[in-house]
Image (cartoon, rainbow, N blue to C red):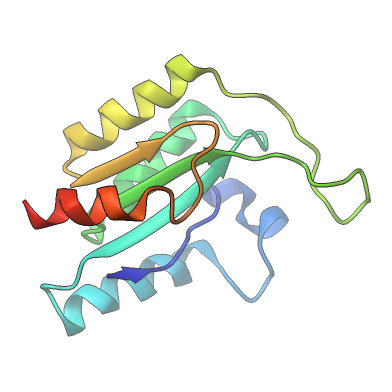
Length: 134
């Protein structure tokens, strides 16, 4: 399993991530992992609630599928402190929206999608590994 987190949608990448880590760069790393070893399972994750739109999340999911990412984790961003270095929480995503993301992801061809407010990058990794072995 090879994991590289996209972290956020394209539009917010320059705000959320270190300027040395770009959206396209992440997609390229995931693409190269599959090119080097097509049997390798690839995984990425994103936190939502930082101002992205549902359409942007779906676009990000399509981008990940375009480079053959197998597993996706979508979780709720929670602002750790109110210090200026931490991005503000824009919204709490509804359970229905998380369910929608999961359904859309499975329809797109992800082998496994963990999507919920408490989901993090390695959320129930054993469950994902089991899903991949079937």
